[in-house]
Structures are given as C-alpha cells and as structure tokens.
Length: 418
Image (cartoon, one colour):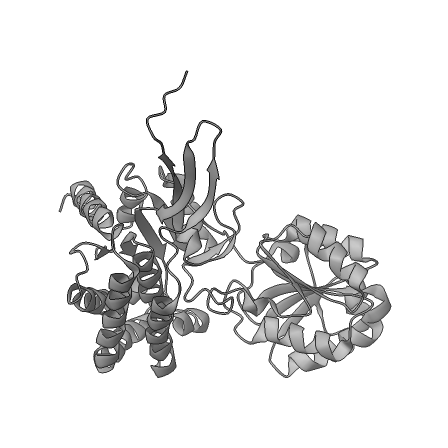
C-alpha cells in the first residue's frame, strides 16, 4: 500500500464530507448521534468480544495494570460512551451562533459567527472510548474526523468505528465523515499530521512521547497537553478533613489519568499535624510517598524526593510531598514545575484563594475541590475531545465551542470603499 496516497485519499474524502456536514441543521446531527448510540447499545456483546481480544493481547504483551485499565471496556464504560453520545445530542449546537454583531457608520453590518473547523485528526492511545467521544463531538459541530488509535486497541476501535458509521449512515451521515486509520504503521501518524490543506487541526491524546512526536512532525495546527503534573496546595487556613479527602481523591481515585495530582504542597504551619495523617490515609490506599527533607522529618518512612520528582508525572499510586513556608512559595513551585494543567488550593482564607487563582498559570485552577473534575462531562460540556494546556484557541477541557472557529459575515447595500 502507498501510505502517502492512502492518507491523501482519506483527507480528500474527509474534506468533501466536512463541507456537507457544515450545512447540516442541528436536528439532523442530533438524529445521527442518537442513531449511533442506538447502534452501540444493540451491539454490546460484539464490543465486549472485540475488547476481550485486545485485553488478552495486552496482557500477553506485558501492558501495565494502568494501561490495561485504560484499554478495558466494561459494561459501565460502554454505558458511558452511549450516554455521552446522547448527552452531546442534547447540548445546544454552537454552529451558526452569533458571537457578536455591530454596525459601521457606512451602514455595513458585521456579524461574527461560529462555524466548523473542518477536518480534525485525532491521534490517541489505549482508551477506545476516545473513538466514540471524539466522533460525537466532532460530528455535532459539523466537523469530519480521521481517527488513529493505538495498536493495543485496534480490534475495539475497529468495531466501534464500524458501528458509528453504520448508525450514522442510517440518518444521512456523509460516507467519509468518520474514518479510522487501520494500519499500525507509525508512519501513518506522520502522514496524517502533514496533510496541509486537507486536515485542519490535529489533536493528540496520550502520553508525552506521543504528543511530542505529533508536535514535532506536524505541519497542521496541533492542540495538546504534554503531561499532567497537577498539584494540591494545603494552605495554613485549610480545614484538615477537607484537605485529606481532596488529596486522597485527587491522587487515588484514578491515578493513571492526566488530572490526578502528582505533588502536594503543605504550608509549614500545618505540616506537623497534616502530613502524618495524610501518610496514614494514603498508606491504606497503597500509595507511596517521596518528599523533601522537612517532609521526611515528619514522616520518616517517606522516600527522599529528587529534583526530578517535582517534574514527574507518575500516573500511578505515588505522590511527591513538599513543605513550603508561604502561599507565594507554593505558587512559585507550581508555576516552575507544573504542566499548566490543573492545580488546587485548599484554603478558607479568601485572600489566599484569590492570590492563588490569579497567579497560578494553569488551564484550570480549583478552590477547595479535587483536580479530578477537569473533564468535559464534569464541566457540563458533554464528552470532551481533550484537555489543552495551550493558550491559543482552546485551553482546558475542550467541548463543542472549542471545536468551532468563526467567520465574519458582512452585510451591505452596495457600499464601496472610498
């Protein structure tokens, strides 16, 4: 197979489909999404069977428990995919919405309105639910999508894409609005993200190595986050019970995801009482700790942290701990070592809350809440297409609005420029 020619063909087909999709009314797009959900619901056994093939191959290949967890589609996760499509169908369609309007002195009416981006390439690893989530969001916003999942989920992704297309075609989905790259050749990713004029945006979802590879080779715009080094800062004004519950949840509820915390910072005035309680609580969850010398003096069984630990994205039950002398020092640490993803302050003092939210340079900043809420569904956006730590076009969880761009429509009555 001529891989380059095949990718160009897919890109050209996607462009044709995207131009047709751009004109679809919200009612038609919603009918397509609903039909897709019904098709998945009617083929649960088939999805489970194909996923079992991938799980068996993953175990044989020695995938870690974290990666196997990402790969697994159990009944609850299938329920979540189906519900996600229906939730997105129920959301307001942003396409065509008027963002602003003004009238010039010469009588020209200028309207800024939302339009689809066009063709979006999604490169992702492990999680087959991304196939469904991203397709739903892209189609709702009138975009065509080219999917390239990881080889570890190739059977699951293939059946999901097939079912989505079958359901969509029954309600008028253009033939190539959803395409899955089936080859496991890594060069396909390079070809995809270099399709200038055919792919309008690339969104990589996965580990740092994948995202950096996509960014390095891309000739089309890329929205990304490299990793999730998220923090919780426990202020001197924090309520200990609140802080303990949030740190435990943010670290242990699902440690292998990008919005789980990797470091906790504790104000020196609270460390002597808080850290031993935290260590005992996390020990019950089999979470290991490493920390600076001050943290170790309070929790002797804690490993010594190195400079690399402050930058580390463990994606596992391990947490770095540091004692800081001030709120300012905590903010400086987060801005230096963090990944600008999601960071939280636990504090009752409103001045401390304001200082933190204004000065921490992250996509999402929390006050007295777990970082695990950084998620499109939890934000009420429906299923998300990803989380961006970039500052241009999109930042944080990306929902429907972030999958649109805009155009200016200028209405005149024969005006000419003098």
